[in-house]
Length: 121
Image (cartoon, rainbow, N blue to C red; front, top):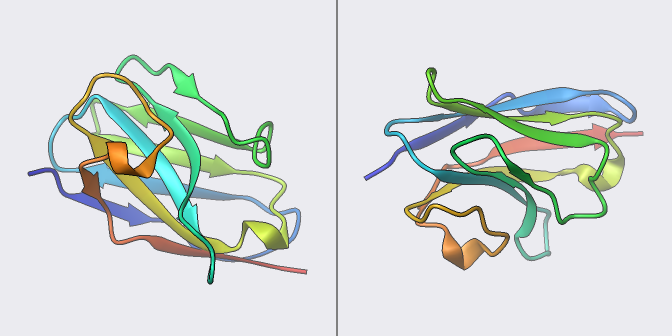
């Protein structure tokens, strides 16, 4: 069982930055960040495999958000830059038992409790 704990969310003005962290209890191969805004489905943000190779399929965050990991610290990060009000959501960290990073939520086996990011005008 892998436990994930997110931190780093908060309230920020549009154009600002945040860094989210996800501490995981056990080493995992593929990890990802998802987000869910009120009334909307959970949405893929970015994923990363064990070697640090990123998977970025989400056009709305490309060039603004960056996933990274520190395997020694068992921590995955999500750097959020140039934040927009539409980025407001609960951000979730996820891990899967498989080797490859995926963009589908159902491919992930473990989830954190989420951290709220709110972007004001």
